[in-house]
Image 1 (cartoon, rainbow, N blue to C red):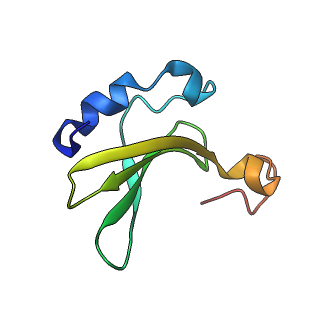
Image 2 (image 1 turned 120 degrees about the vertical axis):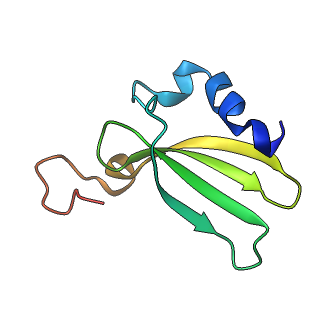
Image 3 (image 1 turned 30 degrees about the horizontal axis):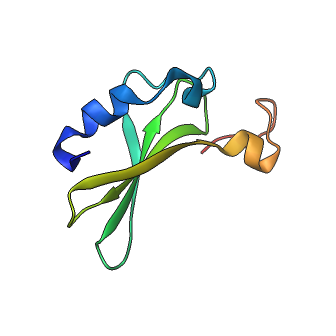
Length: 87
């Protein structure tokens, strides 16, 4: 899938991969760029704090390499009542 059609890629991600989290607004707050400039990890915000759909981009190749749901609450055992639960 070409990088320029990233929105098409995002729209083609099966709903089950979102695990019930709503990322439909398409807001991006964080982008991690590899020091070589080759890769970018684009974190698409969900409506839930600390939960993102991550797109991995090969910038020179202009392709989307893949995606995964990143739930930092689950990764780190956070709950909404934890003061550290803010990204």
